[in-house]
Picture 1 (tube, helix red, strand yellow):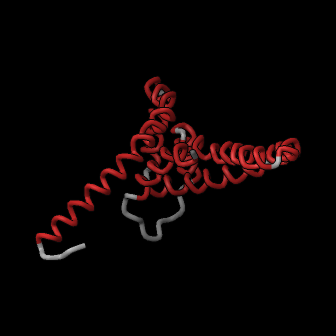
Picture 2: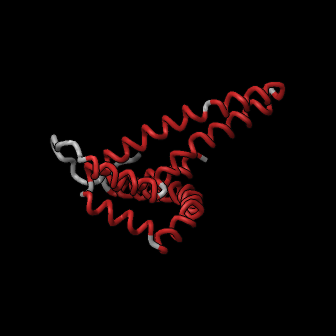
Length: 166
């Protein structure tokens, strides 16, 4: 389940890391970092980080609710008391993500991306993004297996043509 919520974040980070690295670039200006942070929040990447706590809470409830129902009340209280610490951890990754995007994209580009997400079409995109990514992830699982099997079969076939048995 966590993978579904991180699909958008992974895609965004993949795009960020695909650009060539800049050697010893000076740290981004505060306004540049703020533009990156705004883009991360408006694009929904930050929302993906929020899902960690939700998944943790649900996992604890499922795991211990079934095996140790007498702990339910205390577990729920303790888990909820951990929310501020989870929020602080989420803020850490948002800072890191902001730094990554600020190093990879000019401030003006970050502001344009933010403007898109503030626009009506950007808001509509965000309204269905999570469901669409969930559907894509569901479709990706069997597709990934089928594609891997197809490629392995093709590899075996081509290697046999060259006299090798895998």
